[in-house]
Amino acid sequence: MSQKQILKEKIVEESPRDDLIRRERFPHIWCPGCGLGTVLKCYVEAIAASNIPIDKHVIVSGIGCTGRIAGYVRLDSYHVTHGRPIAFAEGMKIVRPDLEVTVISGDGDLVTIGGNHFIHAVRRNVDINVFLVNNFIYGMTGNQMGSTTPLGAKSSTSPYGCPEFPFNLPLLAAALGAPFVARWTTLHVRQLADAMKRALQVKGFAFIEIISPCPVGFGSYNDLREGRDFIKLFLENCIVDHSADLNKVGITLRPGEPIILGNFVDREVPTYHELELEVFRKAGWLK
Amino acid sequence: MSLKLVREPINKHLQKVPLGIIHVIPERCKECGFCIDLCPKDVLTVGEERNIKGYRWPKIADGKATECIACKMCEWICPEFAIFVVEVDRREHV
Image (tube, rainbow over the protein chains, first blue to last red):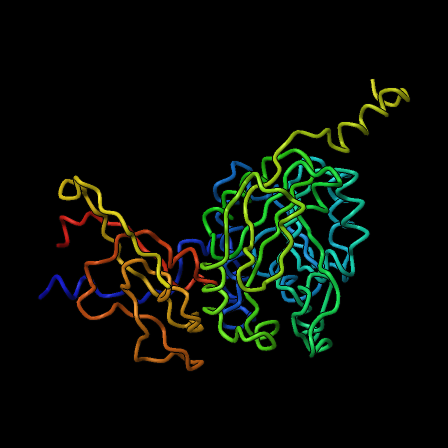
C-alpha cells in the first residue's frame, strides 16, 4: 500500500528544461491544442543536444503566433517587423559569423509577407537555420487565407473554399539550392528535434517546414476543432519518405492523400560566407 | 488512436522494463489532451481537480501506477512543459 502512494503522479513547480525557457512567462499565450509549444520544446532539446554554447545561439522571429517563440526562450532573442526576420538574421550572420542564428516564424510571416526575403536568402545560401511553422492560415490576424492554405480549405476570407494552389515549400527551397530541407509535424517530436539538431550543424541555409495544429484558427473552419483532431489526422495520413519526389509533396489535406514527411535534402553547398571571403581575397582586402 | 505495440519479442520475460515516475506542473496545464491520447500504455487520464484557469490536469488512471515505461512521449509532446517523466529502477519500486 505504501508503494502505491509513492507511485502517484508528483506535483512539482519546475520542469528540468526551465533553464532554457523564460519560466516566469509561462503558461504561454498559445491556445490549448496549439503545436507551437511542442516546436519550442523540440528547439530547446536541440539546443541542449548541440555542442554550441548557449551565448552563441540567437533566435529571430517575426510577427504572429509563432513570432512569440522568441519571447519564451532564454537566449538572445529578437522580435522584428512583419516578414523581415530572414533579412535581419542574414545581416546578423554576415556581421557576426561566429553566432548560430535561427529564425523561427510562421508561414504567413516568412513566405507570404516575407516571401521575397525567403527566396533570396535560400539563393544566397547564408548560413542560417529557418524553422517555418506552417498552420495553413494567418492565425493571429483573424484566420484569413494565405499562401499555404490548401486548395479548397475554408478560412474567414474564403468561406466557400480557397481558390488558390498553395506553396510547395520543400520543393521551393530545394529548387533554390538549399543544403538541408526537411518537413515534420509536431507529432513527430523526436524526428523533429533530430532534424533541428542536424540543421544547427549544417553549413548553409537549413530549412525545416513544421506542420502544426491550429484548432482555433484553421481547425474551426475545417472540422478540426480540437488539437487531438489534428493529431489523429497526422497519425492517419503521414508517410515518412526521405527520398520522396519533391514535386509530389504538396499538401492537399484531402482524404486519402498523404502528408509526406522526411529529411528530403542534405547536401554540401558553398555558403555565402566562403564565397564572400574568396572575393575579398581576389580583391586584395585580405592577406 | 494511441501508439500501441503490435508485436511481442520472444524473450519478453528477460527484458528489463524501465519505470517512469510522472511529474506534473498543474498551473501550466491547458487540458489539450495530447499526453492522454498519445500514451502507448494509456497510463494517464483526465484528473478531477482544476487549476486556477479551470483546466483539469492529467493524473494516473486507476491501477496503472506501475505501467509507465518512461518512453517520455508525454514529456515531448506537451506544449506547456507541464509534464515530465523521471526514469527509475523498476526493482526498487515494484
